[in-house]
Length: 181
Image 1 (cartoon, rainbow, N blue to C red):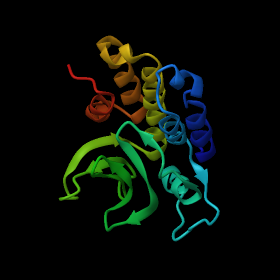
Image 2 (image 1 turned 120 degrees about the vertical axis):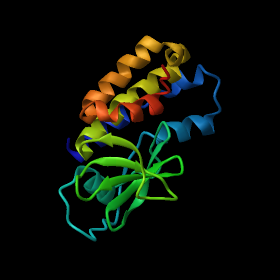
Image 3 (image 1 turned 90 degrees about the vertical axis):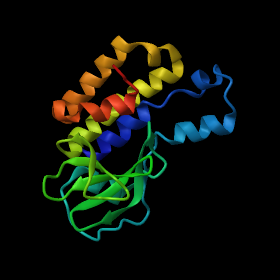
Image 4 (image 1 turned 180 degrees about the vertical axis):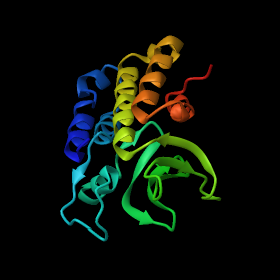
C-alpha cells in the first residue's frame, strides 16, 4: 500500500455530516469526528532517518495525530527506541513497529519487552486491516445494531485477521472491533 492510497481511502470512509446529524450529534463533535479520518500533509517534513516502511513514511509526510481508529491513534512524531519505533498508541499502550521483524505490535507502556498483541506482519498489512476496521466503525455509526451482530463482527474480525497476515493477529482485531465469543 502507498501512503497516498491510505490517506485517500481513510478520508473516503468518513461518514457524511448528514448521516451524523441524523443521530442528533452536536456540530462540534461531528466536525472533530470527521477530522479523525484525515491525515494532513506536513508543511515541514522531518526526515531524521530513511526508511521504505509505509507507516514510517506516512508519519514522516503526514500528520496523523488526529486519526482515531477505534482506540488506535497515531503519533505526531516517530519515537525511535532501541528495538522498535513508537508509531502511536492503543489506549495508553505503545503501538510499535518492531525493528527486527518489521511487524506491528502493541507493547505494554510499563514494560516494553512485553507484547500485549501482535497486530500485523507488516505496516502495509496493518494499514489495510485498519481500513477494514474504519469501514466497520463508520457503518456502525450509521447503524448501531451492527455492534450487536456477532455474525457480522466475526466476519469483520476474520477479514481483518486475513489482511493483517494470519491467525496470530486475530486477538487484536477481536479486541479492537469488540467481538467477544
